[in-house]
Length: 174
Image: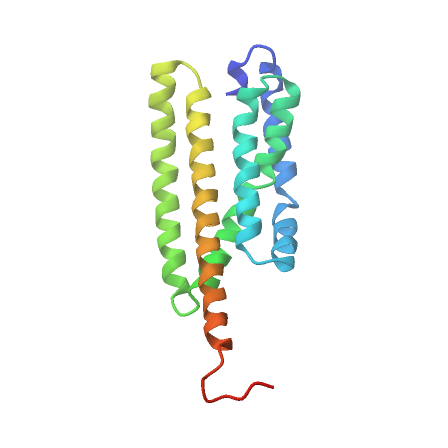
C-alpha cells in the first residue's frame, strides 16, 4: 500500500521494519497493562489504537502518518491476539479451550477472506483506502462489541452484589 503512495513509496520497506520493531515489546507491554486491569480494557484500547494505525496512512499519506501507523499496528497486533485468547480463557474457565478453538477458527477464516476481499476492492477501486477503511470499521466494531459486553457484565455483577446485600425481613438492623 505504501508503495502506491508516490510521496512515500521509497519508505515502504522501512514501514515494515518499524512494524516489527514495535511488535517486539508489545506482548510484554500488553501483559503488564492487563495485570493492572482485566484483559478486556486493554483489549479495547489495543483495538482502537490498531484501528487508528490502520487508517492513519489514509488520513496522513506522508512519512509521519505511515510511521505512526506502523508503530500503532506493530504495537498492537500481537497484543490483541494474546489479550483475546487470555480473555476467552478467563471468561469460560471450564470451556476455555473450546472458546480458543472457535476464536482460532474464525481468525483463520478472516485471514483467508480478508486478503481476498481486499484484492477485490483493490481491483475495483485501484486503491487500498477502502480496504483500510473497512478493516478500521471491523476493528472499531470489535471494540464497541467488547465495550457493550463489559458494560452489561459489570451491570449484572452490580445487580448480583445488590441482591446479596439486601436485608432479609427477619434480620436485625445494627
